[in-house]
Image (cartoon, each protein chain N blue to C red):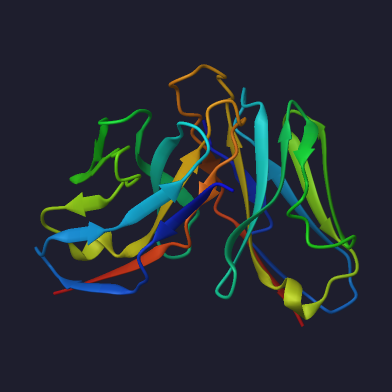
Length: 113
Length: 118
């Protein structure tokens, strides 16, 4: 079945460090890919998305590139801030599969001064 | 738009009691999702509706759980009777199903209801 695998957390970084959170997927078709972020005590919100191979999604300094050949959608940010501390979820959505999202398990990011 | 609105934000109840969680989706959205989040199991999709019709309820844990969507602007998730293992944060999300290849249907989440069953 369709699935998303994320790196285990928590990931702890110092402010201004480079961030990578790995995400790989398995899907029967050609999915759209998403990163959602959940700040403490809040619901999930969309961070960025990509709908086809080689697309790059970007928002708030975060980027992820849809790599069909490696079935990956790794999240990166060049310089993290304390305010980026949150849980990050990678997800896929199949074309023609309605609106259903398949989420990874989430990766907690902690950024320290 | 006010976004997806869930109520109550917090619910504390005793084992055996009925619990009803409520959700108002974003106006104009035609898909609605109920999720449960726990430390042990992460984020689980319980059920989702398209155009007020339940499409997939395979994630509903057991018969104690039921969900309804009587109209496009309201949905409920009911647990009867509740048990301590139902303690979790329950999220509602809504989306507009565009149905076109190459377009991503973004889900918008509510703030969640934190349920504690004692």
